[in-house]
Image (cartoon, rainbow, N blue to C red; front, side, top):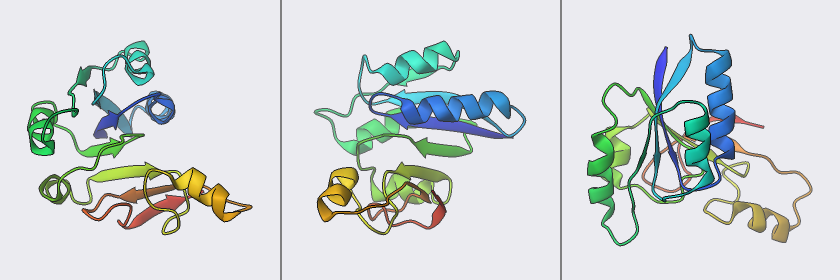
Length: 150
C-alpha cells in the first residue's frame, strides 16, 4: 500500500476522485494528508468529508523553499505526492528530492498545451479532441515521463 500526500489549490475535483479510488481500493493507496496553499477552498471540505488530515500552508508572499520546508513536516511516511490542481511551481531541489515519487494531473494531452492555460490554449487552437495526462513531475513544467493519458 502506498501513502499519498495530495497538494491542492482549489475546488478539489481531482482530490475527490483520488479519495474515492482510495476508499474503494484501500489495500492499494491511502491519502495520509492533503496540503492546500490556500485557506477556505472546497478541496479542504472534501478532505474533511473523507476524514483526511489536512494542512493549509500558504504560498502567497513567501519564498517557495519556505513553503516546501513547511510541507516536509507533513510528509513523513509519504510514498507519493499527487499534485491535483496545485497551481504553484515547486523548486528544482524539491522536485529532485521527490523524483519519480511526485505525479501531476494535467488537463491536456502532453506534450501539447503545457502550463496553466492548457484548456483555453487547446480550445483556441481549435482542438476537436483533448484529454488529460498523469505524469511524473520534473523541474521543467509539464515535461516529466507520461504515466497515463485519457
